[in-house]
Amino acid sequence: MEQNLHSVDILLVEDSLEDANLVMRSLKKNNLANNITHVEDGAEALDFIFAREAYSSRNVEDKPKVILLDLKMPKVSGLEVLRELKADPRTHSIPVVIMTSSREDKDLMESYKLGVNAYVVKPVSFEGFVKAVAELGLFWLMLNESPR
Image 1 (cartoon, rainbow, N blue to C red):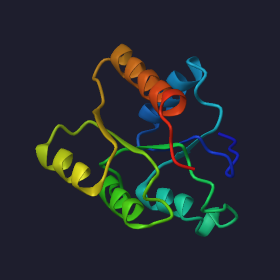
Image 2: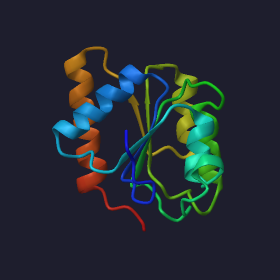
Image 3: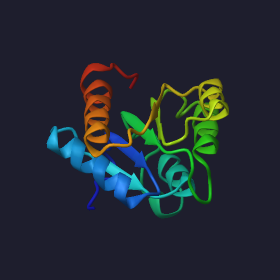
Image 4: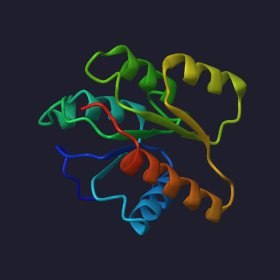
């Protein structure tokens, strides 16, 4: 997907290409995906957010309006990404929504302890998944007021 790396509304951090495609299709269907960037693992997410490696031409101050973050990923876990985001003054105010299949209490508790803004368990049904993504997009992009 062609991306404008300097103007990102949504950073989607998802290792499942099937889930990522569903998220992007749902957002597009609801006219909420003008500036979405998808990265496939936690290491790439951190590089993107902190303008490192392949993303070094980005300005770290060009923050996404929201980050949709999976927990269970290769290289760097979603919890570690969240930990680094919330620990850095440049990025701690970016809203982060965990989108995961994990219903484990320890994941939920640790996410909130680290400062997640919302924790959503991915619905199993296609229709439920699409509806949940559309509602998340509507809230975080249209209704929520984020710090600049």
